[in-house]
Amino acid sequence: METPKIVLGYHGIPTAPYTIFRSLDSSPLSTDTTPAQSAISAPLHSKALAQFPLFVKPTAEGSSKGISKANKITSAPDLEPVVQSLRARFPEQEILIEKFLSGNEMTISILGTGSEAHVFGAREAKYGGHVRDTDEDFQSFERKMTGPDLWADHSDTAIDLSEPLTAKACAMALAAYKVLGFHDIARVDTRFDRQGPGGQPFVMEVCIPAPPLEQGPVVPNPLDLMPC
Image 1 (cartoon, rainbow, N blue to C red):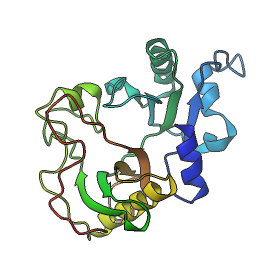
Image 2 (cartoon, one colour; image 1 turned 120 degrees about the vertical axis):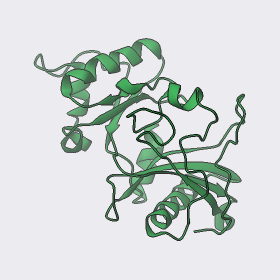
Image 3 (cartoon, one colour; image 1 turned 135 degrees about the vertical axis):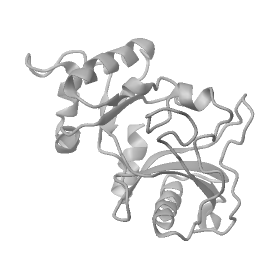
């Protein structure tokens, strides 16, 4: 998980400010803090991580496994219990703690290799009761895997790739795809740091989609085939 963030950062492609809680981080740096609080005080992103909400998840899972409503951390006392719960459930994995991004979430589908790589579709996640009566503004395991299909929380039709915010997310997603050396096909999940025209997109994840056991596409079905 950390290596892609380092590579993307080197190339000027933003990801959410983060820290990694490793299995060896079992004791705090100070008796006044918990291990998780010590982790977010690490120098790299300590200023950004001092502001809540944060988001916590295991580093090597898919399909939102390990993610529930509790993973969005809105206050300091909630951080340690969630981190320790994930450590117990996923003892072989590191735990990612990152700044929660509150803006638009877009999933970008990319096809091709090298100079021929291009965006061929995008979907925007719709939260706040659009599909389900819930106040969650992210995809928990229950929300993602128990709904009518894998993309139930996303827009029903492909969004306009020329719309300014979408174009910004698509350009960043394509750049991330290339610098990480992906080829053939991949899905890039992006999210903006805030709502509105001034939002900045961040890469959340780049993955090679694996065919799921459930019905539904592994990338959003694009209706607009024009690249960004």
